Image 1 (cartoon, rainbow, N blue to C red):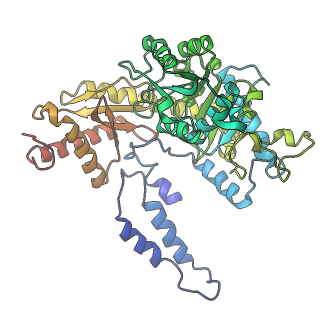
Image 2: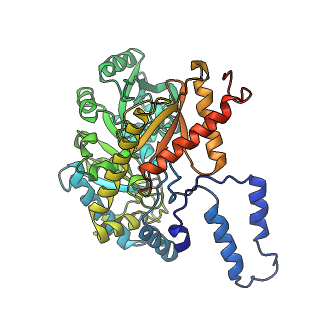
Image 3: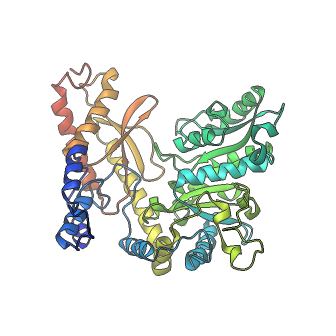
Length: 473
């Protein structure tokens, strides 16, 4: 691990064919079948080496492709300890310190959300998708109290439950509608404006149209840092609409909620204190090992509305000071990793500034590379970056408009295969764009300029290759 972290070379993604990697992995397995094989240090070293060098290289300046984060190494040490002591944290008696520090971190982070102390609740979940599902279950059970026990039979002759989302919402929200039995047909997609935010001028008309279709929108999902471009919806204005119509406002801040700890960037989530619930992934911009998601509720009593079970083997009949700390009744997970521990230890050791400075740098770097692109005539940007995500296109003079999409896709695939840089792509208004996510503080402007040079080199190669890119001239 020390050697891995000390390697500052520029590495993207070295893809290995699955069959080749499978053969390499099988070759490292013991052939002993009858007895416990003896410890083989060389075998273990080879296994670890294979593990480290395959997959994404989150600590390399060449890694700009996804929202998986480089981590603060100390967090990995704590994660190792958690694996060895193996204390599941859904119940206080099994993991006492994780349950206590979960409450401590809830109070620490709520200072930036702004809810009255002791009125809110926070629970950790294994990932943002699970947090979104849990929050929307709580919202549905709050607005339709009989749905949990009776299902849709509890709503005879009533309007069908529906969820309103921005048209660029994370796919986990759409998936949630199917999991909950709401149905994807009952998702009301709200149009976006030019900044890829929910268009506030069209929200009320869209909700009115849903009502005429026989739908009752019980939950409105705002995004604080969309996956595609990192856009932030206007939480304050959406909260006004939610109050008017008795709608639960959930904020999917899996990526962008971490900006709350930054004095410079907190305004992106203006109005967050008016939300009913908030998803916050610490394993993204808080730089801790995945998964570590924080699910906040403005009213702590509603944090127990997602699930309603009786199970004598885990839920005590007579609550006391210890069981009051349990989170098992608030999450799907009965056995849950003590995922709060790496985050708390970093906060305890270094304080808020560790996170704020890194977030500020990465978002400032993204704005700086956006300015670089504005000065390059053969590139175009698709949006102004609100966080650390930036999408752009390579548009040399020789490419026809109808070939722009195919060119971006081909460039991204070639860059990935070359293995120096790892970037992603996303379709914006139906046309592919190259996408970088600055998750590593070792990345500099110079690394980005090197990426642009590599893109140009690939483009030059493709300019004479009509076979690979549509009708390029």
